[in-house]
Length: 425
Image 1 (tube, helix red, strand yellow):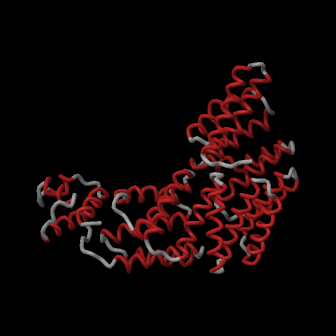
Image 2 (cartoon, helix red, strand yellow):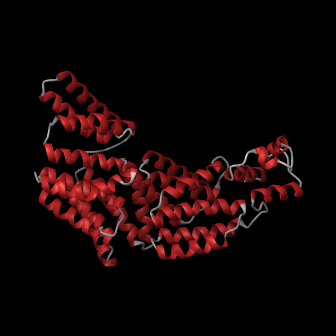
Image 3 (cartoon, rainbow, N blue to C red):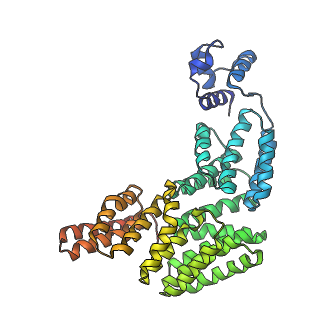
């Protein structure tokens, strides 16, 4: 960033108008020329502007400071959160009001809060403050900026947006020199995001690249995470043997390190293999085992397992067990708007367990609340599952025009999934 960009950035961060910043220092047109890089102010004007903004405009050794922040990220990459805590506190204590360092601090604070503290809301504010640098940021700083933007979108469940930011970060890998582990981390996040979007080919390509680097560097915990993603992809194409093989390899690592949350992920996906094979009792046992292993994991990390169990109780005609599970978790799910998707799934099943299938009350809930939410978010996979249920209800009540409309919507949703590269069998 040049001097003018730094002044404009901090003026906006401090929520000052050009008139407020310029008052008693220079004219507004002159400040505008400074901010746009048309003119270079005198040392005296620079000093006055810096004092009003409460910052330092002098140049710092950004490379040295960046190395310290990258070292913080390396601890996060290694899943060593105690070390990350110590490094972040040290950086926060020593950090000054230099423009360049302030931007670095905010970027890495965002990554730290999301990775080590599972905090999203403060990150939204911080990244909004830094968003003014979108057009001028480059190099290593840009890589980590777009990593932070991608992580925020990922944890906010805006997956297409997350994938866009991760691919933008990948361009920095191509244009600058980065360490191998920085490549591996980004490849893993692209693979994970693409997997959650059911973009199997992209997910498999990037996850395998990440796995190769992790295994070469004996980073077994991350290797296990990669194998879980690969297992999910094979599960989607009904290659159950390969899926199970990958999960059992991951389980060996989890047992070696006694990693309960990792075991929870593995048991969840072994449960998914069981349910796809029609082994519902085995699936219930594995999902329950997963939930127990995830006891200390935040709700976001176990909500899929809870939902999987609810669906299994429906398949095995155990409505009371399903209602009991919903009763335990629904209030926590409703407490955070980020879980709105699962709140709707839970409420649908609550009515399903209470009133049975093809009940008018359920259909009204789907038409008025559930369907509009997923339509607004273009969640084609969920819509493809729910539309036929409504269509079947209208068909059974001899309302063939409405039934035909919802069946048509279901077909359109599947077509949209195909166009987006979503593979879901």
